Length: 95
Image (cartoon, rainbow, N blue to C red; front, side):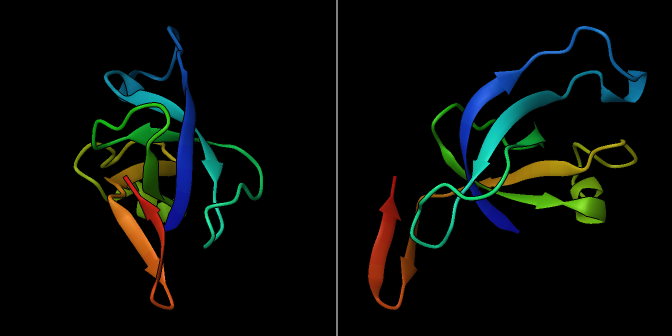
């Protein structure tokens, strides 16, 4: 799993039929300090997350192991909304 902040939404009116009903969000991956890192990711939202929330997402075959994405051609899925995280006793993020 990876940390990311949702920075936007992705809307697609024409898509593979098996993707109907999924919401897509644009993610900015974060490092352990909460700083942006890496390329943007488009992920299916399995938990009802919103823009500017920090989330945990999975990619690859793990992305197809949620109820929302089972047997769907998804390469990334938002699996959790982060409430807080701590590194070495220091709180790095709190919602």
